[in-house]
Image 1 (cartoon, rainbow, N blue to C red):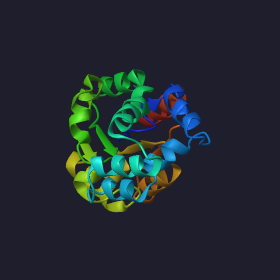
Image 2 (image 1 turned 120 degrees about the horizontal axis):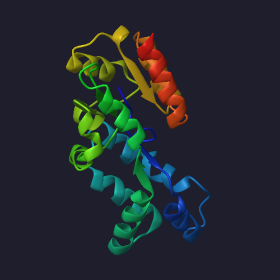
Image 3 (image 1 turned 135 degrees about the horizontal axis):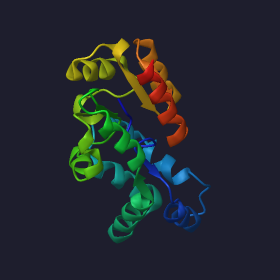
Image 4 (image 1 turned 30 degrees about the vertical axis):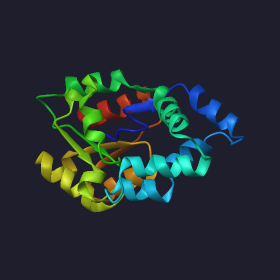
Length: 194
């Protein structure tokens, strides 16, 4: 079971975001904080607001025109890449393991996930906006286990957020806090071999 943002998909080039931060005199990482940690984004994460509402909030905060907002949205995601080493590893486990993405994400992200061929190795995609509940709430982990038809003790969960991994461990799952591809693959192989 894998988190998406920060694990399977990571921002490898911060240049586009840094340009916008410099333009508005913002400190590093504050643009991501504005996008992901605003009150509308939190509602969207559990399906109580639309993705467009999140971006409209950002536009209002930065006083952007429609054209500028479209440019910002493009640039915000421009440095993101799928970790094909991780997805290749997941693909190699098919037939031996059940596989899922468990993502705190906004409405409409399923279509984006389906547009990424690397993610076809996952059997199940659990998206918080569709479920109305987000990590680290225990319920979304339980639903994912149920959908996969596996018990917690048979499952390993990978996330870049310690709190989300701790919640999985509290339910009896093994947990890996993502720090790097190599560290995660080593931990997963140890778990599989155990």
